[in-house]
Image (cartoon, rainbow, N blue to C red):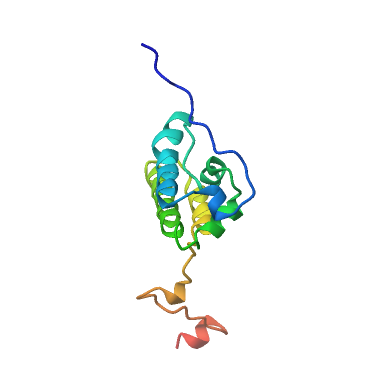
Length: 137
């Protein structure tokens, strides 16, 4: 008995409009699931935004624009979250450098460093000017 070990085919590149990428909400959900459940395991790639875009046959910018679509946006945002979750788990296990995770989360997932002064319970920084012996009295 032969088993099919071929990597699922990526969608052909096309000019981006929502209806050329997905024919329906069901089609969108199925393609996203196929990316995670079939394509990634067989390709051994790490899930990422660019990989999902390539799989769907669109550019990263096109995919970002589709996250605002009334029918497909929520599903794509969940896929975005799933990608971030996968990468965080790889980092926790030491399989993805923290710097790479940080760069990706900031550039593809909207994460930001929180300035220290906005952190809860942060102690304000005090700067003393002058000679230490003068202000120490």
